[in-house]
Every structure is written in structure tokens, then in C-alpha cells.
Length: 289
Length: 238
Image (cartoon, rainbow over all chains, first blue to last red):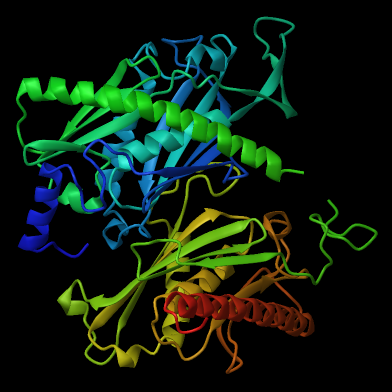
């Protein structure tokens, strides 16, 4: 991105202070976004989310695997994000690795809960096939195609939509004849079960510019930030995860205020996201013969 | 396994010499100077072009022409199974080189000395013919960026069947990928896998060249439509 002049920087900061940002939005106004599901036919579930010029794709692939010995009755979820060089020449070769790592870890923290699997957005015990032997492994891959700020929120919405779109094939387990034999597993080709994604949170990132914080920053606004706090909020208004970025120190009372703003915006956002996902799925069902 | 049914139809219902359905769109990445998405059946590729801009490492600067760089990447979800691909793997490096050389032959690099043009290609869905789809997408993206080219380069892959998908490609038969500068009728890329008798090779190469010509007709339509849209937007045409 070409650097901003001093005049442009002042314009952005001044606008935010006066609650009128460069594109006319208020500080707590989210850009309108569009969701498209089923964009990657070879994956079990996928979604593409566009917020302004930010464009991300999330895909979910389900494979049978062995559960962890500490949680034998749960499946496993792995999240990995890649920043494509088409989004920014800086991401070529290994340039995007740092940002990709940061995003992957932030998403894992908010969506996967603790080490025991408690507090995860998806109930991992629904992914169990044969206790202690077989379970479903979900691999969630995010790809950033175009970058105009607020990647974390966009990826969280894309992952939520992709998980809603994910069909896990129904398995039929034929129990083993004896304990040392493997159980037979028949994977259905046309019957699928869908995940319950009502517990999956969305992420609201609050970017502090000057003395105020804004929701859904564009790339220009992010370049002026001193720090940013990303809060994951689920449907009940509970906080599922928290990440602070940026070097500037924040007064604890400001963080508490940011969290309450995030909760307020998040609850509105999650209702909007749920209705957009439902609309996208309806559109996809209509398109199919 | 049967690749052509007794009625003469392939696995996806096409005739042996028939091409897959093409779909292309310009301007899909806002930030890039030029971008395009190109679909050939189930193979879907996005290309983005940044440039011409200042060369990043001054020692690579060329005094009399533009430096063309290219990077090819495949998304983790692009194929049916999900191999963890490392960024610098050999196949990606080779394909990046191939695309760069093909486009460099067409771009009028001597008009933009001491600059750099970056071509990035991202594969979203891979179903055979990714190399060809990438070159076609790159041509569209470069045209969208307004970078001057001496000719449109298109590419198509053929074996015993035209424009094979992944299943047909994995059958182990020959695979000839051709890159053609269409108006000048000159080849800029020729690659082949497996082995072919010489007389059949000529037929297969002709098949691929026919495919290239069909693709360029489609690409020309897309570019014309795009220009019309731009004219409407600027009020030059009512």
C-alpha cells in the first residue's frame, strides 16, 4: 500500500474522533458484507465472505482419524490460514507467514476452547465415531484473497458459514468380531449430517485510533491504529476469546469498555450473520436442480 | 476403467475432442492493478498483477526492460485430498518459472525499463490443466492491468483427449501443454509428459492448438465486453 501523507492521516484520525469515518460510517458501524456458501465443491463445507474489499474463503474438510488419547470421545479440529500473494505482493513466498500464523492462532484460541475441548464453538463429542479408535478430524483452511482490513472478523464469519455448510458423511460402524480386530466403517456417499453451529462465535475487532475505537477498520484506518482488541462473542453474549494486538498500552478500564462495546456490536452482528448464512444456503439450494 | 463409453462419451459427458466449459471475469481483486478469475470446467484459478512499479531489490533492476516475476500457489483445499504443501515446493517453482517465461515473451517489456511486474496466480480448485488455466488467467489479468502485450497468449492441454480433467490426466497417458501466441500463430510453451509416437504427437499438438484458438476467441469476447462496460461508465458510449 502506498504510504499516507500527513494530511491524509489527520483526516482519518479527525474523522474517527468526530464519528464520521472516511466512508461515512459511524465508529460502531460494520460494513455490509456478503456470504456465499458451497464455493469449493470438493470440500465438505465452504464459504466466501466479502466485507468491503476484504475477500476470504474458508473450507472445511472432514477425514477419519484417531482421537487424542487424552480425549478419546472427541473429534479434532485444526485451523490454518494462508495469505495468498494475490492479496498483497508482500505475501509472496514466505512474506505472509507471520500474518498467517497470527490469524491461525487467534482463530484457534477463540473457536477451539481449552485443551480439554471444553468451551469449543462446536461440541467435539459429536465428531466421535468409535470411542478411543476413530473420530472425525475437521481441517479448516482459510485463504485471504484480498485485504482491506479486518481480516480476523471476516475469517471468523467465513469459518462460521463454512461450518454451517459442512456435511459430515454418515458412518455405519460394524463392530469388530473380536477385540483385536478393527471395526468396519462404512462411509455413506449420499447421506450427510450437519453440525450444530449455534455455539460458534463471531469476532469483533475494536481498533483504537487516537482516543476512540472503531469497529471493522479498513486498511487505511488500521495503519493509524495504536492497538486493537479482538473479542469473540457467541450468541448468548459470552466472551469466547480475547486477543490484544499492537504495541500501545491500554488502561484496564478502557479494555472493559471495549469489551462491552464488542458485546453490543457482536450480538447484532451474530444475528445478521446467521440470517445471511441462512439466505446463502437457501440461494444455493435454489441453484441446484 | 473406461475413459470413453461405448457411446463415445467421456466421464463427464463430453465428446473426445470437446473442451470444457470456460468462464472468466475481470477485476476480482480490488487492490491489484489487474486481476482475473479463469475457470475451465472445475479448474478455477485467480491471477493478480501488480505493476509496473519500482523494482524492490535494486540489484535485480534491468536497465532496458521490465523485470517480470511470477509466483504460483495452490490452496490447501484445491485438490480432493489435502496434502500440506510447503510454499517452495518443486512443482510450484517449476510452474512459476513456466508462466513467467510464457508471459515475458508476450509483454512488451522494453517499454517499461527499470520497473517490475509481479504476476501472482492462486489455484482455488484443481481438476487437471492448472498450468494452462494459470496462463489464461494471467493473460486476462495483464490485459486488465493495461500492461501492453504484443499478443494474447492462451494455453491448453491435450492428450488423446482434449482438455483433460484430473481423472483423465491421472490415467497415465500423454499430456501435452501448449502455449500459443494466437495472432502471430507462434508457440511460446510446449511441454509433454509420457511418450507418444511421432505421427500421433503432431495430431495431439494440433488438438491443443485448436483448444488455444477456441480459448482466445472466448477471451477476446470477455475483453471486448469489459471495454464496453468501461466506456459506459465513462459516458463515452450511451
